Structures are given as structure tokens and as C-alpha cells.
Amino acid sequence: MAEWKDNLNESWGDLLELIDTRSQLLTTSYDLHKYFYDGKELLALLQEKHTQLPADVGGDVSTAESFHRMHAAFERDIHTLGKQVQQFQDSAARLHAQYVGDQADAIQHTEHEVVEAWKALLDACDGRRTRLVDTADKFRFFSMVRDLMSWMESIIRQIETQEKPRDVSSVELLMKYHQGIKAEMDARNRSFSTCVDLGMALLACKHQASQEIKEKLIQLTEKKKEMLVKWDDRWDWLRLLLEVCQFSRDASVAEAWLIAQEPYVASRDYGQTVAEVEKLLKRHEAFEKSTATWEERLAALERLTTLELLEVRKQQQAVQQMMRDQAEEQRGVRRDDSRDITGDSSHFHTAEEQTLVSGVEEKPDLLNGTEFSEDTSFERTDKSELDESSGQRPSQALLLPALTETERAATLPTPTQRHQAVQLEGALVRKHDLEGLDKRASNRSWNNIYCVLKPEELSCYKDAKNLSYGITYHGEDPLSLKNAACEILTNYKKKKHVFRLRLHDGSEYLFQAKDEEELQSWVQAVQNAIPQQGESQGPSTEGRAHSLPTQPSTSASRDSGGGKKDKEKRFSNPFAKKK
Image (tube, rainbow, N blue to C red; front, side, top):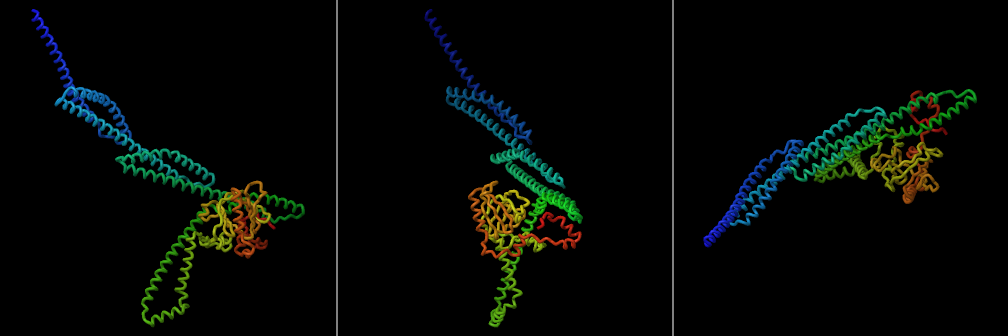
């Protein structure tokens, strides 16, 4: 009985052990089969998600942005798949430690398939996101370019279709409107910078539409340059027009004032008694005082406007081009003639022919009208070319052939003055103090000018740019330093570093330097440029034409001129004081 009981207990223990062993085997088998089943399902799910990625990236900005939002939601959905893939990898690592042989290889192969499918899905998501971003940036760039191009077209139309003003107030109003356009253009600079930076970034990342983006950038840059050029041209035209309108207004006012004063000046009423004469004298003195305010305004009307200076410059360039073309043509003719002469001389071989040639060479008078005159003309041409290559400006007498000798003497420098070397140049502040002996200048204000000192003359320009154009300050002639005197004004209290230049005709100019060193250098240079008494033989007739005023006409000549001369004198300076 006891033995049977022991056998029964032993059998029960074996059964329990077998039950436990089978339970473990079933659990392990379940895990293995579940691993393969989960692997298949996960792989199918990853492949399904991969096929759900569309290839379309949109045809405009809104569609591309909508696709980008949908893709962001899709990436959030596959984030849970990432967690499942991670759990699957943990299960594979646990089972791989429990099995060997074919089962271990199958476990590893299934894990590799799932991981590769997951990586492929992530790569596809990243690639689509990149394409969507690039597409959205491309369409946003194209949209910005389209908006900027349309805006620039409208700005150019506004610039080109502005009305043509006729008076000063309308010109000033139009200039204010033009400045408003400039302010709008400046406000758009940030948009231009953003658009260009976006286009350059797309080109840097080698976008698939790089060629089209590059063309758009070039179009945008050229259009902006065209807009700026048109604005600058219109602004320059408005400034010239303002100056012309101001001149027209001032000239009209001056003409009206002169016409209004003409009856008083032409009056023959000289008084019959002493009281009447004294009354007329007082009235005339009051009239002379009232005309003092008009003297500066009439002097300003005599100055050349910017439009006239630009026209003179254009004529100078045309004459220079014509002279260069003529010189090239003459050089070509000279080369052809020299080749013809060389070819002809090669035919003389006999002694009689050489004798004839030598006889012709011994009589050069026969050729005075042909070859000799040509050589002389070519020599003049070479000299003119040397003058042009040395940077000298051509004479303005070539530009204005209709001017008389008196007008040329009053407007052009002497020929010897143009070829003189520059001794000193720089910026100074000038004041015209006296116009003659004890005669105060009409405009005694201080002006910033650019001075160029040469032997025996001092030229004044508005700035260095006008010096390169050859346009003097207000079209005035160079100051002749013959019999001039230069000294430092130590007792001048209004400004520092001032020196005075007194010319031979009694006029005086004050110049201010920026410091003591510049003052000393200018005074020393001017004193060295003043010719000594032994060097100068007195002013020539042409020099006197530059400095001496015209002789006043007699009363008889005025009376004999009639109404025509009185009309011409209406625009002359009526403020010249009688001696």
C-alpha cells in the first residue's frame, strides 16, 4: 500500500512536470508564431503606408501648402508605427537568444525585412517633405517675382505718364509726387532683398527648376535697374525743368519791372524851377535805391543754366568726335598717298628717269600746292591729336562759330592759358568783396568752390566733377593774376584762415582755407603764380577785352538808335553807375 502510494505520488509529480514543460513550450511557440505574424502584418502596414504617399506636389502655392499640411498629419500617423517597429525589434532580440539554427535565421530575416521597410518609408517621407518645401518655396518665389514685376510696371507707367508742368508751382508739386514714388521704392527694398535671397537659396541647393529661377532673378534685377534709371532720368529732367521755369518766371518779372520803369527813365521832364529839379533829384535817388534790390536778380539771370551748360558740353563732345573722325580719315589718306608714292618711285630704273625725278626734287616750288600742303595739314593734325591726347579741352570757339570776336574775348580763355600746368588745386570758400575800385560786389555771400591754380591765372569750379567737364563756376572766366596781390588777413574777425586776392582791375576776392597749413600753402602758391614785373609786358588787347568794361555810348548815339535800340536796352543792366 505504501509502495503503491509512492508510485502514485511520483507519477503525479512527473505529470505536473510534463504539464509545466508543455506549457512553456506552448508559450514559446506562441511567441514565435506571434512574432512572425506580427512581422507580416507590420510589413504589410508599412508597405501600405508607403503606397499612400502621393507623387503630386501641387501646381501653385496654395496646393503645395495644402499637401504640406497633409504630409505633416501623415508623419504624425506613422509615428505610432515607429513604436511598433521598436517593440518588434525587442521581441526579435529576445527570441533570437532562445533559438538557434533555422529558427534564428528566420527571426533575423523577418526583423531585417521590417526594419528595411520602415527605413524606406521614412526616406520616402523625408523626400516628399523636401519636394513639397522646395515646390512651395519655388511657387512663393515666382509669386513674389510676379508681384514685384507688376508693381515695377505700374511705377514705370506712373513715371512716364506724368503731366508736363508749365510753372514753378506745378513743377515743385510734381517733384514732391516724384519723391513720394522714391519713398515707395525704398519701402519695397526689403521685399526685393527677401525675394533675391530666396532665389539664391534655391539656386544654392540646386533646385530642379534652377534654370527658370535664374531667369526670373535676371528679369527682376534688370527691371529694377530700368525702374531706377527711369526715376533718375525723370528727376534730372524735373530739376532742369524747375530751373528753366524759375528762370522764365524771374525773367518775366524782371521784364515786367523794366517795362514799368521805362516811362520814368525815358521821361523828358527835367523841371522848370529849382524846387522841381530838387524834387526830381530826390525821386531819382529813391528810384536808384529801389533798383539796388534788382541788381543781383538780373545778374543771376545772366548766368548759364544747367541745361545750357549740358548743351555746351554736348556740343564739345560732338566737335571732339568730329575732330577725331577727321584725323582718322586724314591719316588713312596719308597712308594711301605714301603707298602710292612708294609704288610710283619703284618704276624709275633708268638714269634718265632718275634725272627727271632729281630735277623735280630740286624744284620744290612746283609742289607747293600739292604734297607740301598735304604734309603741312598732316602736321597740324598730329599736333591737334597730341593736344587731345594730353587731356586739353577744345576751344569753345569751335562750338559757337557765330560768336563775334568781342563775345569770344568775354567768354573764352586765352590759348596760352589752356596748356599751362596745374600748380595747386583744392576746395576753398570764396567771397566776392569788390567788383572794382571802391565798388562793392552785388553778391557778397560765401560760396564753396573748387579752385585750380595755374601760372598767371586762378580758375574756379563748383566741384571736381565740373572741373572734369570743363564747366567753370557760373560760367565765369579764370581770374588773371597779372599785377595781382595776395595777402593773409590777420585782422579779419568774421572767419579764420582767410586771405585776400586783389586783381589789377581793383576787384577783390576773399578765400578761406580749412586750416593754417592749407592757408600758407595757398598763399605761397598764388604768390609764386603771380608774374613778376619784368616778366609781364602789360595786358594785351585781348586781355583788356576780358577785364575792361565796355565804353558807354553817347547820348547822340542813343537818340539816333530809335525805338529798336530802346527795346534792346530794356534787357541790359540799367544799374551801371555813372562816373
